[in-house]
Amino acid sequence: MKNAAGALERQVRRTIARYDMLRPGERVLVAVSGGPDSTTLLSILHRLAPEMNLELHVAHLDHGWRAAASARDAEFVRRLGVRLGLPVTVGHLGARVWQSHPRRQSSREARARELRNTFLIETAREIGAQKVALGHTRDDQAESFLMRLLRGSGPRGLAGTYPVVDGVIIRPLIDVRRRDLLDYLRQRHLSYRIDATNRDLALTRNRIRRSLLPLLERQFNPNVVEALAHAADLLRDEDNYLGELAQEKFRDIATRRGESVVLRARAVQELPVPLRRRILRLALAEARGDLRRIALQHVEQSLSLLEERRRRGRVSLPDGTAVDREGDHLRIVRRIPAADQAPGSGEAASLREALCPVPGEVALPGFGLRLRATVVPRAEAPVDLRSAGKDRAYLDADLLPGPLLIRPRRPGDRFVPLGAPGTRKVKSFLIDRKVPVDERGRIPLVLSGDRIAWVVDHEIDDRFKVTDRTSRILVLEKAPR
Image 1 (tube, rainbow, N blue to C red):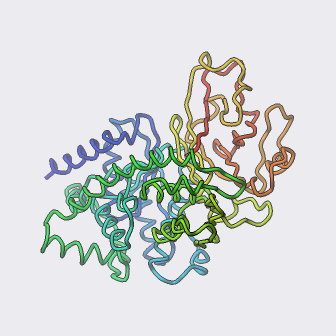
Image 2: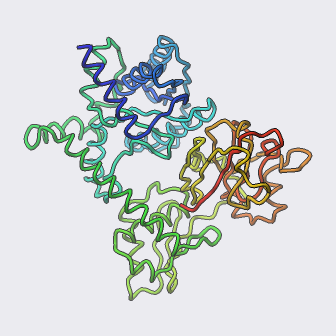
Image 3: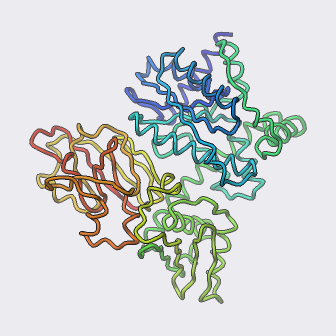
């Protein structure tokens, strides 16, 4: 029996290597709910940590909607961390978070996922973790495939869960069946918590897990989970290829104009339909900051504006976004925020935050770009570091341990502009630079810890500049998505 547990650990080790999830010396934030999946994930990573030279930190978010049961889950995770000798961070959501939210359980689940993701990213930044490990399994992949198929999702949605996202989020159990996790827990004599909401058949995922998949296994294919997950894997490969192709086309036919993104309608019309859909999604993501609440039907409605007989028209989308046809232009317009309101104070802004590993890169759909971080010896950098330009910054690498946080401006943000005698508010700095009001909230800030290192497109912080004592240089470069 012990050999079977060891075999599962070796399988996870192969998955980590296959997708290049972890590197020696990295700090990993492990998301642990207390359920069987995340408990197994923590146990396996804890056993692999010595040989892989990993530093683990446990994170748990108490959603607070199951009262005493939620508190017991949090206490279970705390004790598990103590038993393994690992630090634990527990976050709590107050009752006010749920008061203004729709009562439907499915909506609450979606809201909880958003808040959990934000909590994990913020915790990873605070502790300096390079990776965030989640416990999704092969079964989760199959369930997601069916959920999205029933919703009518396209190939991109059916591609499912990615093993690695933006070089930060990793899923080491993505090749493992859930039943194997339960065997592992028994063999390792590990207890775990059961979330009562997992038995709630009002939730689509639970009906798929408890009713539809067992039916398909009994009457159609005993290996249906693997078949569905394999289909998602194949679609993911296709999605990656088409995504790269769409990015190239998007750069050729898209223009940003203030808060809008403009596409050349004729150029879009000439493309195959799959590329049209992807390019429109790219434009929506850049204009809105994300694609939440945007479904395939919204994309199709917007593309209907490209019909030859329509030279003008508008399609209204969720959250105040609109797609306008104006002659040969297809304009995606986002809802304009209140004048000069720093977006960091709202929920949407927190979802535009991202972590960039050092070295590594991260996609920033909320800002319409990618950020790449590389470290080079001082001797390999240009002699004139002021020649970096708007798209690049040179900083002292030893003063900026990764990962770096990228986020929008928040009220009260301050930094020390290069050569300045003291701190200045970022808002005042941008006003002096004559940055238009509606563009200030779309300028990303790069932070190390809680200090701003680079106001992208404008200036670095004097505290992180390269000096005669600098031995390694951190090069930050931005590129369009």
